Length: 224
Image (cartoon, rainbow, N blue to C red; front, side, top):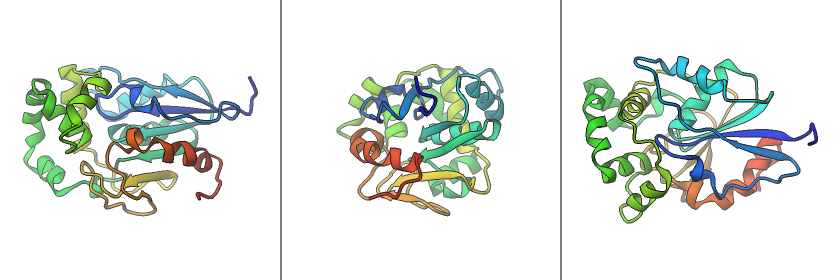
């Protein structure tokens, strides 16, 4: 295999499987795609410690990291421990200041502590929390794409999202966000590539946009 091949590692959203990337296709003569799956966190494991464990799963140098939703937060944390070619954050946030008022309130009141158990026992609620208010689609999406129902993981992951404390955007992060994202309402700080009509699940239902533009972003080419 040519040494010019660029290795691109993908991290899915909270509790999601790499199947969310099933329609993402990058030119095989230029890129090799790798899918990372969620690990079960240790008790009281910090997001920094967890990110270091995720980095250990990367087998190549100077890679591209692409993360969606909570995966977008995770790849930013991972980027602090590895040299990257590109860091791409999709349908996510770059700082705690980009959270919705609802999430900020959940942090302030510690309401996130009572969320996880109900989510584990309620497929519809978990799907809504992960995919947003796509009422007709969310249970079907859950059954296909959400694979991690471990309570320890869910407790941990929800807390890490709500309590993420990043103050300033990482300057190297390329942020792609849908203008109709209901989970992380569009309030990008700093530079942001806005996908018109894109929702929180645009990696699934707007995959053609990503297939067209991800290679350009990675190779520093202008978007159409």
